[in-house]
Length: 196
Image 1: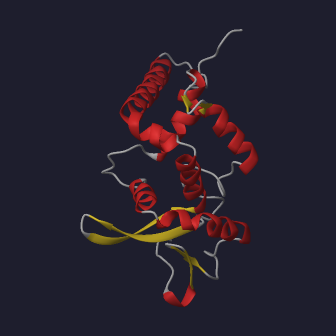
Image 2: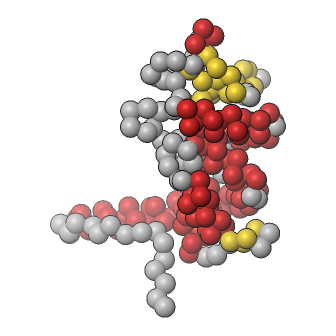
Image 3: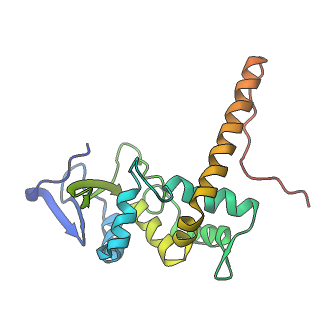
């Protein structure tokens, strides 16, 4: 269900609205996390970043491209911002923050049968639209902005997206070639295997 909560069943945390009660209400741990990060989203920059994520007209990096940067791109070729290794920073944050689909996730994924959605309104092309995301995605974006990852992703998003699409297309072509030969394609990682 993608309908925002009605005024009679709504809690507000900063610019975000959530269901107060019922099946769509956030569990207490996510309410606490949302209350902690909500004030960051008073910034127009943060609101624009969050709003751009589900957009088909994005001009900046998608959440998928940012995840690719942190998990694949920076693993294969170490990337540093302000002297900090991006992959190491992300892995450390994942361990400390408990990288789960509920609390720290760039993909806005559903958890079980629950989506843990948060709603916010934003002016898009001169019209107010009600958009939604998840607490996990908002938390992930906050982490990226605080640690210079978002600025790097914005500056290099064309190259990152190009390499990501090329890798995915190459993998797809490999699977199709294997299927034509009647061979089951082996599952591979996008990460380069470095022999030591």
